[in-house]
Length: 247
Image 1 (cartoon, helix red, strand yellow):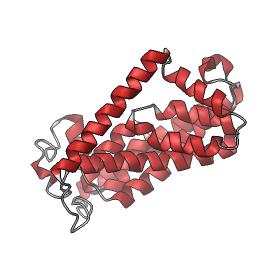
Image 2 (cartoon, helix red, strand yellow):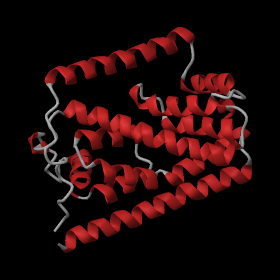
Image 3 (cartoon, helix red, strand yellow):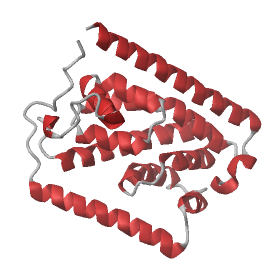
Image 4 (cartoon, rainbow, N blue to C red):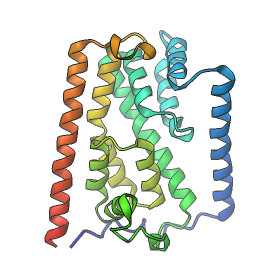
C-alpha cells in the first residue's frame, strides 16, 4: 500500500481568505507583466539580463547578498534557475558559487511553494481538484498522485530528473504537500544540477559565451554529474514504484 501520511496539509491549517488569494494572484500577474515589459523595453533577453547582473555585481561587496536575493525572487517572474546558477559560477567560482546557489535555490523553492499553496486556498481536501486522484489522468495526474502519496521520494526524483524547477515548486505548494519533505528532497535532489551548472559557469567569463567558452574538463565533469543524476533518479523511481506495488 502506498504511503498516505503526507497526503494532507498540516492539520489545522487555516483557509486562505479569497481576498488574499486574489490580491496575490494580481500582484503575481503584474510582476510577470512588468518583467516582460522591462525586458522588451531594454532589449535584453534572459541571458542578456543575467550577464548585466554579473557585470553590475562583479567585484562589489554586496554581490553575494544581491545574488541570493535575486535567486530567491526569481520564480516570481519565472526567470530560469539554470541561467542564474551558471551566473553564480561566473561570479563566485565553484565553491562559493555552489554555496550561494544552494541557499538561493532553496529560498526560491519555498517562495514558489508558498505562492502555490496560498493560491490553492484551504490545504486539505485537494481531492476536489478534478483528475488529480486518477493515476491514469495523464502525466500531470500521475506525478500529482505520486507527490501526495510519497512526497519526499517523488520530489527527489523530479529534482534528479531536472524537471522544470519552478513547476515542481508551484505544484508542490498547490497540492499542499508537507513543506519539510519537499524542502529536504529539494535540498538533496538539486545538488547534482547545482554542481554541474555552477562548475560550468566557473569555467567561463560570460553567460553569453555559450559552449565555446567552457573548459573541456569542467564541461565533462558537468556531463558526468548530469548522467549520474538521471541514473539515481531512475533507481529512486523504480524503488518507490516497487514499494508502492508491494503494498
